[in-house]
Image: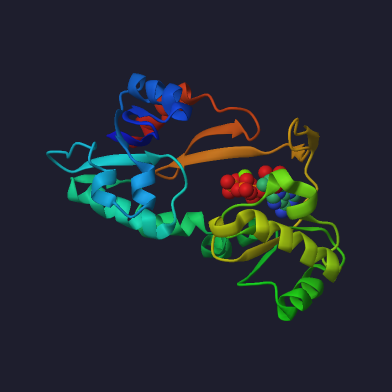
Length: 243
Ligand SMILES: Nc1ncnc2c1ncn2[C@@H]1O[C@H](COP(=O)(O)OP(=O)(O)OP(=O)(O)O)[C@@H](O)[C@H]1O
Ligand SMILES: [Mg+2]
C-alpha cells in the first residue's frame, strides 16, 4: 500500500516540504509512497500530473495525503491512478460525500450544529436565517471551508436576524474566498465551545476541539485540533487497521 503525496512546486522529484517529516513516518510504518504534481492536476493535465507515479503490477491500494481537490479533480485523479492499477481507498463518491457538508449533513444532523445552505444570499435566505436562528449567533462557510482567520469580519455573525450584519460578513467572506468558493454558502448555529486562547496571528478565538481519523470504520487517532499532529503513531496504527 502506498501514500500519494504532492511534489514540491519547484522540483517534481522532491516531496512538498510540509509533508517531508510525515512521509518518513509513513515509510517507517511500512508504507510506500509516490509523488504527483498537484499544479498539473488542477491545470487539467492529468497524465503529466501523474507521470512520476510508477504503475503497480497488481491492484494496489493507496491513500491520498495532500491539498484539497474539487470532486471533479478527485475523479480524474482517481481514474488515472486506477489506469496504473492503483486504487485510492476513497472512491470519488465517498470523497464528495465527506468533502461537502450538505452531502453528509442528513447523516450527522443530530450530532452537528444546525445548518442551512444556499446558492447565494438572496431575500429568501435572509428570511430563512431569521426564522431558523432568530437573534442567535451563527457562522458562515462554504460547502468545505471557512475564513476562520478573518473571524470577526468574514466568519462570525453575532445576530442571525441582523440583515446588515449578515450581508456585510457574507460579502467579505465571498471577497476572500474569490474563485476558491466551494459551491455555496453554509450557515451554522454558533456553539459556545471551551475557550483556550486567541490565535497569535489572526486573533481568532481558539477553542477546545479535536480532529479524529477513521479507517475501515475504526478510530485511528484523535489529535488536538490546534496543535501539530504526531504522525509516527498515526501511521503505525493505520498500518495495523489496513492489514
Ligand atoms: N458552529 C460552530 N460553532 C462554534 N465554532 C465554530 C462553528 N463552526 C466553526 N467554528 C469555529 O471555526 C473554526 C473553523 O470552522 P471549520 O473547521 O468548520 O472550517 P475550516 O477549518 O475552514 O474547514 P475544515 O476544518 O473543514 O478544513 C472551527 O475550528 C471552530 O473553531
Ligand atoms: Mg477546520
